[in-house]
Structures are given as C-alpha cells and as structure tokens.
Image (tube, rainbow, N blue to C red; front, top):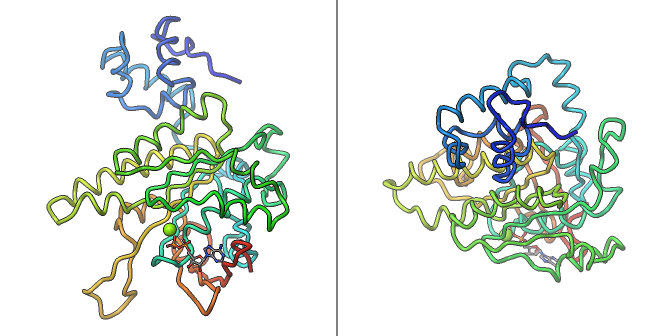
Amino acid sequence: MADKLTDIPGVGPSIAEKLIEAGYTDFMKIATATIGELAEIDGISEKAAAKIIAHARELCDLGFKSGTDLLKQRKTVWKLSTGSKELDRILNGGLESQSTIEFAGMFGSGKTQIMHQACVNLQCDDMIIADKEVLSENEFENRKAVYIDTEGTFRPERIIQMAEALGIDGQKVLDNIFVARAYNSDMQMLYAEKVEELIRSGNNIKLIIVDSLTSTFRNEYTGMGKLAERQQKLGRHMATLNKLADLYNCVVLVTNQVASRLDTFFGPAEQPIGGHIVGHAATFRFFLRKGKGDKRIAKLYDSPHLPDSEAIFRITEKGVHD
Ligand code: ADP
Ligand code: MG
C-alpha cells in the first residue's frame, strides 16, 4: 500500500505533491534522503527538511529491529542462478537480491560473460529461487535489467546466443534490458541514479549491472593526489547501488578490474581496484581466474554468511555453465 505523505507532520497537500514530483514517493525514500536533497525542493527549508526526515524515520520504524524481524526480511531475498550449479552452490543457491555482488578478475576472466548470462537468466522462471509465500505474485512480473556499460563490451548478439542455448526468445531478453553506455564516471553515476526514475515510471527492474564499476574512475583519477576524491565518489556511487538493491529488492552486480601489487611478498599479487571502499560496500566478493581451456575458477572470499570457497565453471558459446 502506498504511503500517505500527508501523514508526516508538517507535510500538507502541496508539499506532498512536490515531494512526489521529486521522487520522494514513500516514507522510506524520505527517511533515507539527506537534508540537502530535500531542501532543494521549492518551499522546503533546511529546517523543515530536517523535521520531515525525522518524522519519516519514525513512521518507517527505522531503528533497531529484532533478530526475528530481520529473519522475516531475509525471507524476501530471492536468488538468481548464475547458470553454473557449482557457482550457485557456493552462493548457497544463486546471486542474492538486496545485496551488491562484485566479480573481480583479469581481462578475459569471464566477468562480462557472467553479466550477460545474468540478464538472460533473469527471463527464465526456473532460474529464480524465491519464497512465494513471502513475495507477492507481481514481484517478478515483466522483470527487467539495467546494464550500465562503461567499457563498450555489451553485445546483443551474445545475449541472443545465450538465450537460444536455453531455448528462450533472445529478442524478448533484449527487449527487457535497458543498456546505458557511460563514457565517464559522472555519466556512470548519473545512470545509476536514474534507475530509480525507470522504476517509478513502471519498469520492474530486478537486476542492475555495472560493468565495470571502476574503470572510469581509474582512468580519470590518476595519481595519489586524486585518490581521496576518487574514493569519495566511488563510495557515493556504491551507496546509490546498495540503496537500490535494498529498496527495490534487486540483484546488483558489479565487475572490477585488478591491479598488480608490487609491494607484497605474501598474499595475492593481484588485487581488485577501489580498495576498502569497494570492499566494504560489496556484500559478496568474487575473484575470477582462467583455468585450462574454457574453464574458469571463481573464489568467493568475502561474504557475511557463507564460507570462503571455490567453484569451477565453464564459458562456452552456450554461455556460463558447469
Ligand atoms: P572480462 O573478464 O574481461 O569481462 P569476458 O567476460 O569478456 O572477460 O570473457 C571473455 C572470454 O569469454 C573470451 O576470452 C572467451 O573465452 C569467452 N567467450 C566470449 N564469448 C564467447 C563465445 N561466443 N563463445 C565462447 N566463448 C566466449
Ligand atoms: Mg569485461
């Protein structure tokens, strides 16, 4: 049921209308907005914005929740198959909604292939695991994906090839992907923010992909002097993605390049870009590497509730599978 914004003390019909127009359609969105964001709306002062946010927070019961409530919320999490049973196994079923999942690895390790396969699998009913008693029927109706492509490697032909291998209509899959080519980090961030508009205008976005998360930032912010600014922006970008994942029960997938570390004798020689910012913002982290032939090895190494483990899968003309 939609929230009635006029239930917020201090919000009359005209302010409510302005809030809705600006995209603040429910209590949660207002509760998670910043004072600066709300104060940009005509007729809302900073002081009023602070009050509105505080009241919205009370109304959506932000604050401590019991473990039982959280367990209930966890039941709304659904999972999307990667296409590989092995990879799904170490994920305990598949790619989880309400989280951001990072795939890092060298070029050719299979990151972009996994992203394409996820778009295809989203259109297959039997690739989705969901608790039907908790999620309503329309949760997955006309579901769509957003693909923010920063490297120019999205290939519709590849989508069709993967879809045909599964016996589904490639054209239908393509019709349900919004692709945005981002040439720089500002465009990339803007596209992520625009996803909310797509959702509000009636598109049931269930999968959001950023391929890759870090390449634009890495190219634009070179040198130590720019590092702080880069990390700050990257952190903001990831916060946008995490918020989308939570508010709209989406799966968010990001890819990441790796860089060689010259300063280590021990530990991995290659590390994902983005440092702690990306590390903390991603819920699950994978490291991919090439094996023999079409084999790939995925190592899950940072998950809140799953053990570190490895899976071997393959990338062939059919796509991602065991
Ligand atoms: P990255 O990690 O750099 O994003 P990709 O996901 O693009 O790497 O993986 C590229 C690799 O995927 C290719 O080197 C090839 O091994 C495999 N691949 C891509 N397309 C096909 C295809 N149509 N048939 C078979 N293998 C493919
Ligand atoms: Mg790629």
